[in-house]
Image (cartoon, rainbow, N blue to C red; front, side, top):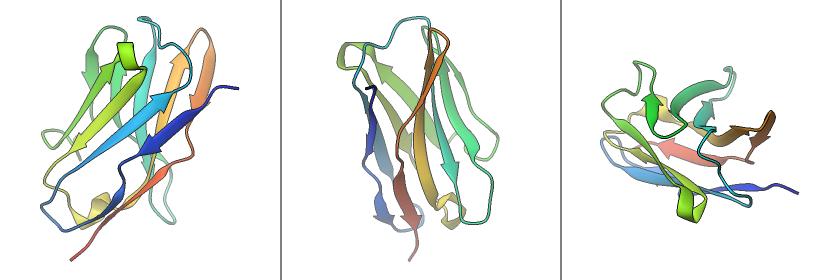
Length: 115
């Protein structure tokens, strides 16, 4: 059974930083798409960062310049560095892997930005 396990969430003050990690229980192939999504209460799940194949990245305007996605294929892990956090970044953050026609999701980690 494929597992994606997120970690690194928590409570942080506005302006602070967090780094999320997503450990994948299978090999991440070079041809794959990994992403971080978030879902706030009462809102739809939305993409916050994506890394495609060997390194092309994609961010929505709401996080561009503040969030950075990176992958370490040797460790089968993807990271999300989040800086200058805002209260509106509060949500459950999910990791996603798409490869070989399969689609896998993690269980999520809570990020709360509050003073």
